[in-house]
Image (cartoon, rainbow, N blue to C red; front, side, top):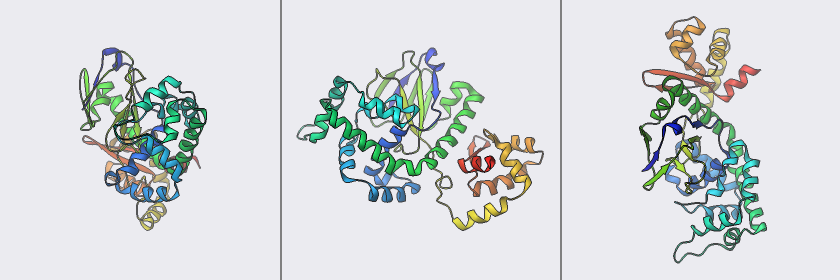
Length: 323
């Protein structure tokens, strides 16, 4: 259990990441490789295909840095929230004293570290360059080809969390994570591999939804760093393209028509079935029929929130509206 302690000031500083974090996603894929049995259905083919394309030297270096349990915080710098290049720049600029401290925690009795990782712990310039290349290569192999899928899932989760925030404020947002997290002011209890305490002390908390997160939320080891909580989003086979292509083609053909186009455009940032019916001016039964076709065509995603049903656009749906 991870227990995150809030003050009133922290509640005012809770933030939801606006996009997937490319380095967290890259690093977390390594645990998806390691723990095959924990992978959902839509990651089975991804794991097989990505492993087949991966370079052995790249995996050896990165897997050595992420043996399970602890792994260095400098691999997932806060700067990566603005993009991959900013994150890699931050890694290359990591102070030597921090590299040494974080790499030293990887050492275990009767197990030596590979020479490249030892050099990395000494701040060796060439070793940092090798790490930069390895992360960049692995991102291009394991994450970049699936980025639309990652974004679709993260945006769907953001729509769900934003709705909870609009309706219930920060308390509503934190309560929306049950049962994965349990909120009871002033503590957020999070399912975690070990018992830990995190006191925010007025710094707030950045919540980062992740497609490749391996089953449980994750956070940084160093409590002095900007508090971040990375959590897994729900996997949707339709958003992952794991549906019957023939059925999808039929749904797309059925989509042609002014009413459904109007329904698609009315969803905007997300709305419930009853809200959509009011916007379009038809009854909820008719709206349900239209949203079923749109969902089968992978143009929208539907999520249940209590008694309500929330519809949000997928990247494919957004692209269609822009044509």
